[in-house]
Image (cartoon, rainbow, N blue to C red):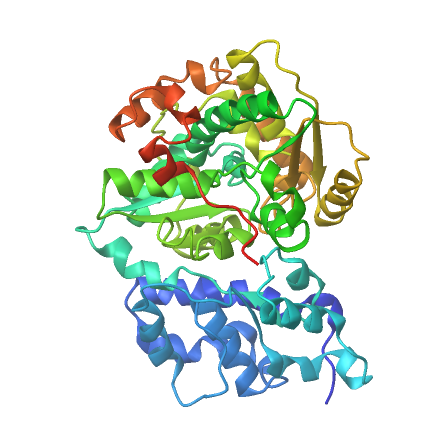
Length: 462
C-alpha cells in the first residue's frame, strides 16, 4: 500500500473542508447532493488514493457519528441519522483505523505508539480527550467528532431555546473587529436564543472557591488547596494518577458546567451549547456525574467553519453590548488566571489570608508539578493546573496563536472596572434568580442550591 504524504495530516485537513460543504448543504435542505461531497471536495486524484471505508468513516466523524465497519448506508442516510441524534456518544475521539494502512509507519512495519496509547486510554477509561493523540497522528486518522449536525434541527426550531455559552478565551478569536456583541448577534442569526459568557459562571465559582480556600486554610494552616475550576485534563490527571491529593481539591464544577446548570435551572426547556478552544470539554460534558448540563460542544475552529459555510460576516453584525463578567471571570482564559482571580477574591474575604500560588501549564508540566507536590517539593498554598500551554488560550482548537490570544484576553480584562465577583451586580442578580439570596451562601457547604449547581463529588472511588 502506497503511503500518503505524512507532512500534510491529510485527513485532518480535509475533515474541515468536508464539514464546510456538509453544513452548507444540510442547512439549505439539499441532502440530495451529500453523497457527492467527498469527490467534489477532496478531488478525484486524492479520493482514489483512499478506500471507501476510510472516506466513509471520516464523514461519520465529521457528522458526529461513531466510526463503523458497516458501510451499507449512503452518506445521505448517515446525515439523517446524525441530524436525529439526541446526543453524541463516547468515544469523543475516534480512530479511523482503515486509514492506518496509508501511514508510513505501517508500511515500515513499525508499531504506532500514538494509536496504542489512545486505545489503552479508552480501554482504561482514562482518556480525557486532551487532543495529544490527535496532534501526533501523522495522517489525521485520530479525530474528534464534530457535534453540529445533531444541533441543526434544534437551531431551526423556534420553539426550542438554544443558548450558546462561550469560553473566556473567545475574545479576539473570530477577528479583531468582532466584539462580544457582534459575536452574540451572529450566533442569534444562526438560531441561538442568546449568548452567555462563561466568564460570568467563572465569577460565581471564583467566589465559591475563595470561600472554600479561606475555610480550608483555616483548618489546614500548613496545607494547600487545589483548584478544580476550568481544566478537565487537570482534574482527570489528579483523579487517575494522584488520588492521594484529592482531599485538597475543591469540590467545584467547571465554569462550563455551572453555566449550563444555571441556564437549565432558569429555563428547563433550554438546550445549551458550549463553544471553546478545547476538545476535552466534549468529554467533560458526558461524564456521568456532570451529564445533562451541556447538550453539545463546538470548538472555535468548528464555529469559524460554520460561519464561513453559511456566509455570515461577523464584522457587519449589530453590536449587542452587554457587560457580564468581572476581571476575575475573564482572566480564567490564561495560565495563572484562576490563581489571580481566587487570590484577589480571597483577600476580599480575609485580607490577612496567606496566599502563595503555583501554576502549571501543559500536560507534562502538570504531571511533573503534581509529582513535586506529592514529594513536598513545592512551597505553595494554592495550586492551579492547565492542560494546555498558555492555559485555555492555548487550546488545540484555538484560532489564534497563544501569544495573540493572551493579549486579547489581557486587554479584555482591563476593559472592566469590576475586579472581583463581589463588585459584579450580575452575580448577585443571577444568584437571586436561582434562589440563592446572598453571595456568602457560596461558601456554605450545606446550601442546597449551591451543591446542586456548583458542586461535584471529586473522590477516590476505587
